[in-house]
Amino acid sequence: MLGKSGARMEMPGCSLCMGNQAQIKKGSTAVSTSTRNFPNRLGIETRVYLSSAELAAVCALMGKIPTVAEYMEQVKTLEAKSADVYRYMNFDQIAEFKEVADGVTA
Image 1 (cartoon, rainbow, N blue to C red):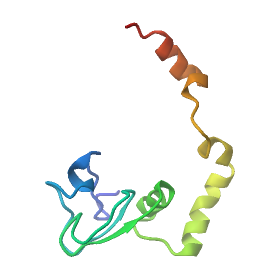
Image 2: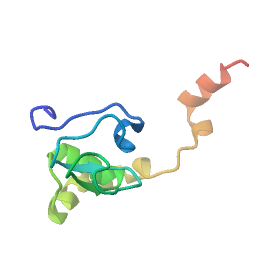
Image 3: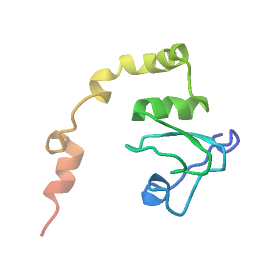
């Protein structure tokens, strides 16, 4: 579905985020969760908008940058799950992670 909309998924790493080898199509618009933005970093004549992971997820779901109303509608589904979504991950207190960690030997 994403491919049909023109979206492209890249491997995480420093290729796109640092503007190294891979770049997006000239003149494209992109949403990035990177912490930096400067001209031509992700591609020539690109328009790059920095966002939170939450907004980036909404953009990916919608295939576009949403209006405020569209964004608010999409994040309504998070409200019911906010206690699980917006929490500090204490990995030492999560049974599945603790089981694996306890089995690690030096």
